[in-house]
Amino acid sequence: MRAVDSTATAVGDDGWVEAVIPVEGTEHACGELLRLGGDVEVMAPAELRQAMAATVGVLARAYEDEAPGGGARAARDARHGPGDEGGPGPRPAPPSRSG
Image 1 (cartoon, rainbow, N blue to C red):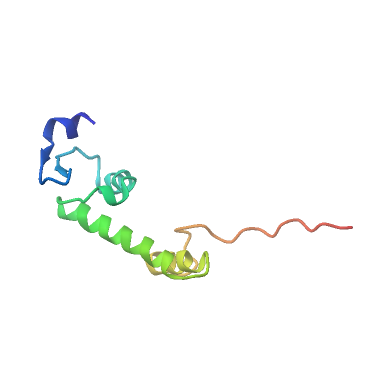
Image 2 (image 1 turned 180 degrees about the vertical axis):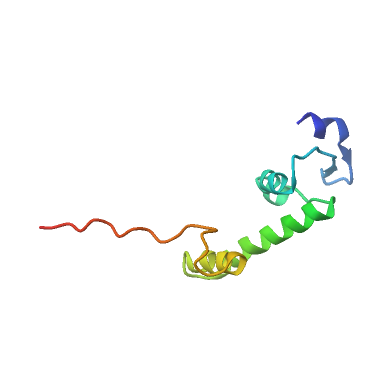
């Protein structure tokens, strides 16, 4: 990324750099930056930092439940409300097999 290369400043001896990058919007930037996992920390703007924290919180709650799917559904319901189409909904029953 040219923006990172042109604005990167080392912030310690551990390899971390601080950079200013242009973003299209909070939601888009959040999605793009989440792909970097623990290798990124948003310092500003506050709206993007809060969006990152909220998303990571939802992900953490999804994985707290030991039963697969239970945590993700609970996290989605907490975010959107039960039955909301904010995530995967019920699947149609598979066709029955005879004989």
